[in-house]
Structures are given as structure tokens and as C-alpha cells.
Image 1 (cartoon, rainbow, N blue to C red):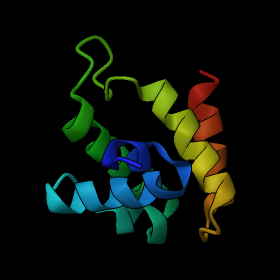
Image 2: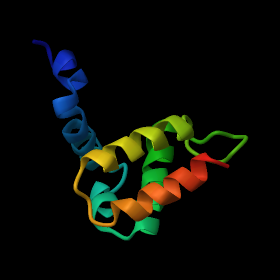
Image 3: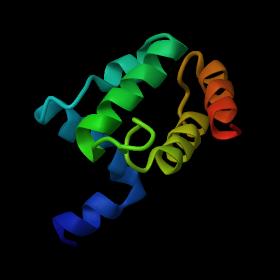
Image 4: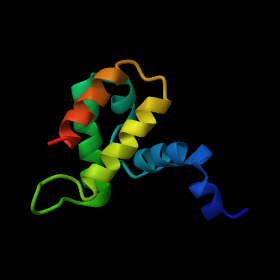
Length: 96
């Protein structure tokens, strides 16, 4: 199995993302999983802009809605304290 195949394996994607963000100083993933719900969403967007750039029309990270859906799915899977509040905030943002 190649490194690319490993990177695409769902068992490793979250770990790989954390490694990348740390190695390239793109943001602090620990703020997302251990901070307050507001801090989690703020840091998620900061990381999104650093990694994906800014949508000039909205000022949000490129691919914002799709990434928020993935973030929501990840929170559903992980046992992150306060995840219910974050998920409610994501749902409210996505329903606008």
C-alpha cells in the first residue's frame, strides 16, 4: 500500500490532518477538540482559511459548507466534550 492510499484511508485521515496542521503551523487542532464551542468554530474557520484560502464573495474559507458538513460528521463520531452545542451551531449556520 502506498502513502497516498494510506492517506485516503478513513482510519488515518484525521490523524494525518492533525499532523499536517501542526507541522505547517496552520492552526491548533486542540482548540477545536478541547476548547469552547465558539472557539472550536472560530479555530476551524482560521484553519480553513489558512489551508483552503478565502472565498472573496463570502469571506469564509473556500469549500466552507462542505467542510462544515465533514466537521459535523467528525464531531458526531468523536466523543468531544460540548459537541452537541457545536453541532447545533453548525446546523444553524448551514440552514441559513
